[in-house]
Length: 393
Image (cartoon, rainbow, N blue to C red; front, top):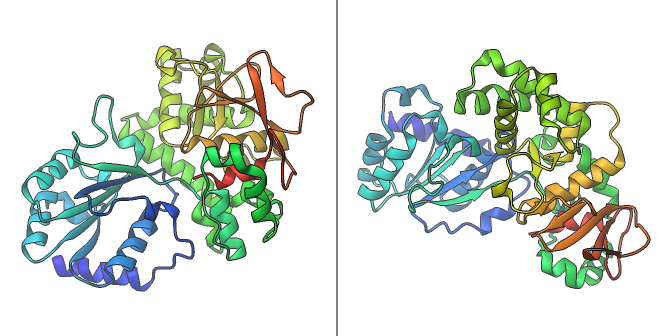
């Protein structure tokens, strides 16, 4: 049976088409013996893994890609498969969709402890961990999160460019120079609205209807990733779907949990749980004021990325909403984005930001305010081009 998996492995590499090399490829320490790649459905985890295999091993049988969705693993254990693989010369085992396999965590810990010559990379949903479980498998695994395409990656693909990611400190201290160096080569604003509509998920690389693919993807998240992994009975799925629709039509908004509870016809506690699941599934952002550990109800809710606004809410979407959702999405990957009633966002609890059109006056009662300005190529002072936050590391 091992040979059948090698044939599948070869077929997948023969037909692999990855026109965009993901930046996270260079951030992972591939020497670690146990690596987890988490990511929402649709962001391209499988192609990311295959791209790594192709670039590092090719058809070398020292590495094997296996999808644990295969019915073979309803009978065969990960432990026995890994044992056979390493005894026959295997060095790197790639286990995709590990959450489909019951008991995956215990078996990966066993493999780590008992097969020191074998390196394992596994992928899965951020929803596959229950409360209290160690994301890093009790210190054994290095865990990384793969997000959708950043605006920088989208621009690089469209222009055949090679723009590098920048840090938040770089932007705050040197945004004029950084923006000018990009603008002299390309017109980033020429690609901005396309990215808002169809640039976050890899579906835009396919010759198919992007929004229809995204709707299918969202339904799979609700029906499988959330309902299966969080053990929600399917009869409650319409309530979860309705909640997401209400959010998409209203976001960003400050939630009234009692009102949402009445509209969805479920309890307040259930609404809070559903919001948590939708956040884990990377469908929404929950923003809090102050210490999130002290609060159960979020202060404000955004959709996780602008593409979802078009797909779930349909119809026209206000530019202001798109701009704020873009900013929140691009910054929140690496930084804590919070709510503040006096400005649009706080970053890391200390930087105050307004997004969109420049508002006169650069101070609030809390201190200096930064402005992420739409339709600006190169900024000055505390006025930073909004698009540049799509180039964050």
